[in-house]
Picture 1 (cartoon, one colour):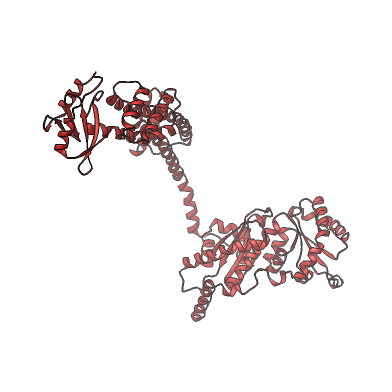
Picture 2: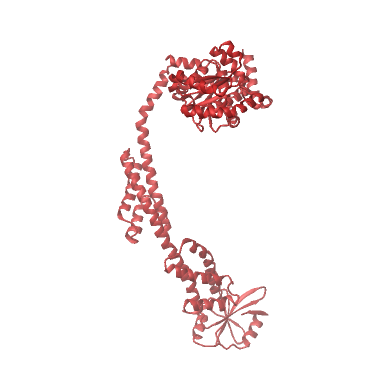
Length: 605
């Protein structure tokens, strides 16, 4: 027995790891007795026009009709024998027409059938009419007459409200699996809306597959289940394409041993499957389960009963826990955006305990931007969380959660409006600061002059003389325009961001220029840049009476014969004395002394 099982294991594993055997078989996975050859298909196509008018007449008169299909000729013998057709009728080789109607209209079949036969006779074709309900079809499955379901699912569709297509995709998927796993499929069962007869053209098709794993010894059970699921799910797309429907197949895959355990434990899902499911294929496993369940012989174990009873005891505890979790979520939903706005205001985010106090001081007391009730909402949320943290708050009611949720929504709505106000102030302040820094620097260089004059001096004395990059000319003009718009309240984040980076570069450039010269005010002093040595640069500050050479922080006064060490105070004094002079006279000896002291140099004007 052990040797037999080992060989079976090898066979299943070989099937799982190779698709060669499957690929050599026909593409359409339809049982032999349900197949339609090309000649038969051509015959059906010729009947199509006649059947179109027949379909419209039937559906118009019996709007509840679920499906009309022409059964495959290969399946005719089965239905003829099953329904006991007279020999003389069988010899005429009739075309079998299957009409499916809802179960609630079952009692009307004796009245409906003569009317349908009358319509069929008008087609002048040899049809034999079968009128059945979904329950009749499911009885085929429960009686292990799976070939009948195969044939019905392969019917040539004349009319279908979704029922026939859903059955077809499930049956094709089953046939694909049967080819792949041969005898290892224990049961293939359909359930859900298809069994209830409520399936539409887009309804999901619920199926579950039970695989016999008792022969598999070389592979862990979980690994086996994963491999089987992957293969079974791979066939969904192929089955859907072959069926030509939009119904999504939703298979659940179980190993036989797991399924038995679930039955023993009274798993609700498994019980529902057994109660409502209809087998499209079964190897003597599912149908006995269904009968035993119907007879009341499948009963849950005491352990399973205890397990499910405990779920009731845990309900109150779980609900209380979730209500506390909801309170915590609301707390963070109030606290976190509040900290964000405090950061936007320009402060570091406070700890949660201090947040209500800081929020109150900034936005209620100082800025007058919020009402006191919003401070109270924040304080309430923080207080509840602190009580929970300290173990004082053990539970909270659903009514309180509803109130907190409403307050949270109102609070966050207020925060969005508050953000707009803060951002507007930040934009205005940022623009003002940038503007003031740049034009204060320009006033340091050129004196306290109007904006237009400062821009003119900037271009003439710094840009055109190459002391500041040309691109800064456009930047300073754009900054002046933005400041005008800012005073009107028309500046947005995009405008500020666009100018901010370039304005900072301009500030750095002006600051560097001022540091090189070590100047505080240079209204009337003449400044020249000189280049000497190995690309060394210095500023030549000419005041008339006294002249200086400035290189970084190193300041030297140009004496009568040589350079003399000096300092910032002496330079500032000389500049102050030169104020008010309309012109500055410079002796040529200054340049002679410079050449003597530092060598040859170039003057940048």
